[in-house]
Length: 323
Image (cartoon, rainbow, N blue to C red; front, side):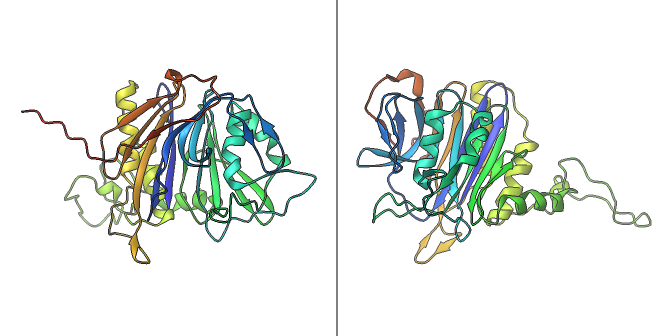
């Protein structure tokens, strides 16, 4: 499963944990403006916004997990099993495969407001990339510096939710997550006082007791609450270094360690964590094997190229010795 976050200090930051039991050998992938995108519906884009993000590249096609374009619009696809429904292609809609949704939006649009205007015309069709790579069940968080939305393909079509919290995990649907937050209204970062009974003399015996009730398990609903609480109570200065560091600390609050969530004969774990400064186009990441923060800068590349630029993830732990 996964957790995605939209976070604002002086700049806007967007990223996610990818939690799975296996890796597709994903890479930091830069799609320049003149890379030719060909979509299943026959549309071709030979000139578009440049994109940076994490992708599994197959036959020179970037299957993006999360990405940001040069205008600062960001999209991430998160697992939505047993709930995502993809439609039969329709002549009355713009038909996109689930794997095409992220690049199609990022190629064309520079803000959430622009995306909102076209979502009624779109449906996610039951297109598969290939026989070996069938469509994954996904829902999406779409963010820029001013707002965030969630898009969920269900039986009725695309459901679109405003996302005032700026967090997304997995099942159930986003409407449930918004409602579920109200169950934790009494959780606080402040020092606690006795509200149990006026006639009892009760005193706190530890710091942090205001957080009693915050979930600590790995379920989607619990990760949504924990990440939301951590984000909204986050305190940091607005320098780049402190903002990026704090963003990863927010994601670390729902980090999954190998061995804690069995999936068949394997274990789900946080394969990578990402953080993109969407104003500057700098994509930061760390992996399960290497928790040093590494960065790739979109604007240091030739954004008018026609060829994808790939940066393999640095997987070996980087340790700095001081003596």
